[in-house]
Length: 69
Image (spheres, rainbow, N blue to C red):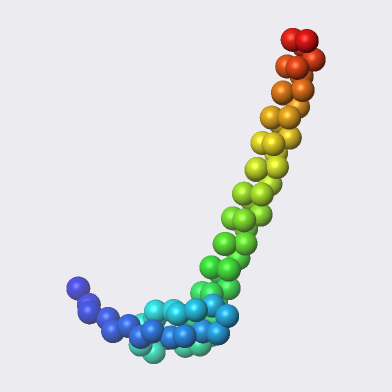
């Protein structure tokens, strides 16, 4: 197994990144962009699913209220 050396790089606005020695800045920027997009899509998907669940719950609860009244 190959032993690879890693270096820690501080990126303003992102934080600390750990990469193999010799990794270019362009590769790091691409990786940060991918991580940012994944995090953003997860937040949006979570918000949409939470809103959909809330709407379905309120429709069901109002329906049960009027049916059992």
